[in-house]
Image (cartoon, rainbow, N blue to C red; front, side, top):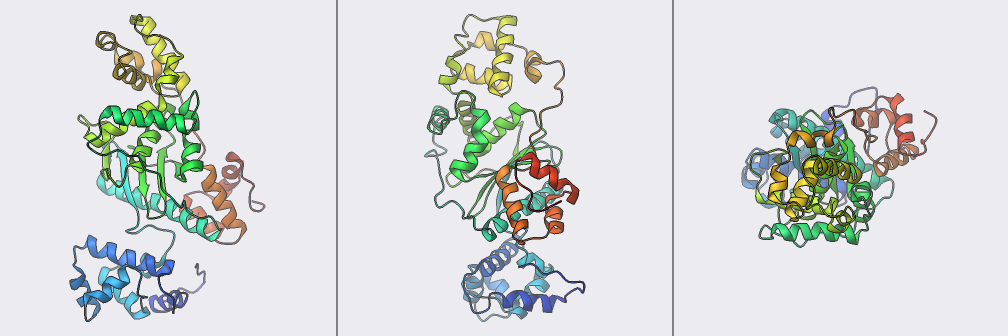
Length: 397
């Protein structure tokens, strides 16, 4: 529900208007949202249910427990009491266009200050919440079943590579798996893939909601890094329950933990399956310039980085230790180019995301001004956004 008025509502009037929408109903999206956000704030403040129940004036913690699970509706005076206890506005508990205690993020980044990352996480959360809310309002249902890999922390690196190979084969990613990966993730697995302009230092992220999986990728990275990050985050999505990733992951750490090493092996094998590499012939007799040139050429063709290809071939024993050690990293930087050049930047967000935005605008589920604010775009930018994804604009812009 979205209120728009020239006169600001008092918190009390706003709380009453919102709560009237679900009065008499149980376990509505609103009750679930309010309950989840109360629970999130309680846990952030390290309060027990008994402590918070006492601050609300409840006789027992069971009342609060029922609120947190969405089994009990919140009265207007209780919602106002929550704003006073936690020092937040009513919007914090009721705004569907934000994530608060509902999404778990894993960020792939380098040297980003914690406060800046938390600020960007809030902005990214608004994109994800907008998709979730507008998709529901326009009749799109979340995936009924989530896919998962049968891997654990005890799995070997060969197991992870084999899973990557199988993924590429079973989803028919073709001769250049990187080219189709994002579409397959969206169409076959129901994962929302978003190409974004994040803060400096962030290369990608995975996000898990109760009903939605999301991968965010820095669209300004070179293609090889984008594709590797995409495959790496896919591993986290498919193994989240058995191997929950760290909230903050260093993209270039001195030492990677086991889960990240498994993710790297999966991503490498998915993007560079043995069957695909077979068509480039034998590497054993190549040395010096001829080896470097072949690595750079093949990496360009497969839309990966030359360094990633080098380590994949070495891991498969198609390159010897002597061959690998003889290669200078400088010769493979930017896939052998003196300068990286300007990368081909994919359009913002993704076609499924933009289709939902267009449908919501067309049906009047949101206003252009509000969605522009959430997406961080000027209203004049929307015509180009729709055109970039081949989506018909909902009305004359």
